Amino acid sequence: MERKYSWHILYVPILTFLIVFYATAGIAASAPFPPKTPILPLQELRPGMKGTALTVVRGEEVVSFPVEIVSIVPQMESRPRHLIMVRVSGNVIEKTGGIAAGMSGSPVYINGKLIGAIGYGFNFSEHNIGYVTPIKDMESIWAWPEDPPSFPQPLSLKEDGKDAEKGVEEEEAENNEETAEENSVENENTEETTEGNAENTNLSSGSEKRALPLQVGGVSQRIANRVGERLGEKVFLAGGLNGNEQLVDYKGTFAPGEAIGVLLAWGDVTIGSIGTITSVDKDGRFLAFGHPFLGKGAVAFPAVKVKVHNVVPSLESPFKVGSFSHIVGTVTQDRAEAIGGRLGYFAPSIEASLRFKDIDRNERDMKRFHVVQDPFLGMDLASTLFTGLIDRLWGRVGEGTARISLQVEGKEIYKGWTRSNMYFSETDVADEALQEVRDLMKNIAMNPFMEISPMGIHLSVEITRQPKLIFIEGLKIDGEIFVPGQKVPVEVTIRPYRGKQSKKKLELTVPQDASGPVEIVVRGGNIMALEEDAIVQGWKTIDNFDQMLKEMSSLETNNEVIVELNYAKIPDSPEDMIPTKEDTELLSQVKERRLNEGTMRIFKTDSVVEGLLRKIIQVQPSDGQEVAVEKEEG
Image (cartoon, helix red, strand yellow):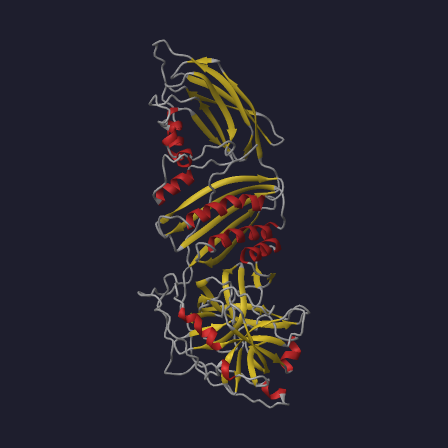
């Protein structure tokens, strides 16, 4: 039978990111970004100049390797307008196999002056050739405004005037690569916040950005692939946050050359990418990557410390393998030239939880995670990750039955809104069941009435491989001719999957304005379901948040048996263009009225209901004789 869904259902929990104190004025307008080390302008660079780059290849230790300028490559109609082609060398590069994904943002210095950051390399080629994004282009991202959601009060960003970014000791012996490898940048008592600002680039060079592909952890491979498709990025399954460590470090710092992670989801599931810090200013702002992350402009993504386990050589491109550690700030800019952010600032997020029960094994589990508070991205990621968690916890993808309850909490819905439903699928119950959840979560997050953050989404799932189904097999009506106001005895025969038949008796009431042939229907919920016809036809609209929630609560569920009396309504006016009363009612109003007047009866089951049957009765005038009508509860 066809099941029609005009909306979809979700539930949400209370969102509790790690918000410390809220600032009264948020982050001030962006100001110029002055690196703490001197800058060597692009126009002063010449082929053959030698310098040093900084990065992390294992643990958290910053190491250096030699860099030589090859050429300045202009970019047509793109940002940045120029890229610096470089050749890298030395022991570090020999061990890594070349410029690795995750080195994006590695600062490059000539004569102790910063020229920019490694941003791009070439796949299936010599991995010791790449592009550096000029530092002036990277700094330009701070000309764009930031738009963070409700930031907390920042912690002190300076301590006794000590600098976080000291000068770089460069040892540039032309024939001594060993000494350059020992250089590193020290960081003293400075806190920085990541704010990424990136836009997609269209480089004529054919190079690719060298941030690590998205690391997705805690979910199934198919969901990791789906996340990559959604974000337009390569992905691979990897580890996540270290659960044995503190999640937030309010005094955490970054130094040039250190690894930085940017997160979209964290907790029992992880979505994030790894790059390198380029520079930090005296106010705790930082630059990284040398290219965009997702290119979303003004953002609010957690910036985290990273422990690098190793660099894996590869014919396509070497890449770092790392684990995300403490959250130390927020990326607020994600632009074409770089990402940028602030230390000590922490944005609110969406909190999500999953209570899972495998009925067949009588196993229970609980998972929690956070996603970024982005109305276009966060809820979409959360609902997708729920499916990936179910895949992992259930240990399979396939047929089965699921009972799902969704609870949503947040601003203006502090008491919470809940919705429960049952689903059966012959192929993929986890994914099909959560389609409704995805749609309803999006409706709430994108509602046009009010901001409801912070937000929480809590999902409860009970799942079995067995088909928990009930089939409608009979519809019997005691009588053929009735008068307005008369009770219609109805008997419905149902059978559970491979079980015994049972019968359910109930009564419908013939309306006073009914006449002629009248239809009695018994059906499973969401099969030929009632819809918001008044909205579709333009007679009404939903104009407030409470009404929107009420309409979503009025949606039918798949485990309902619905018995209804349908008839041709007599218009209140003889003019055809005047709508009937039911035409102008919202779904919740139609349902409430029909239950009260007795033209609809609903009873719930513990299974998904399949089937639809119809019968016709005749309604004749009562010739003035009153018909006794007993009061019946809906």
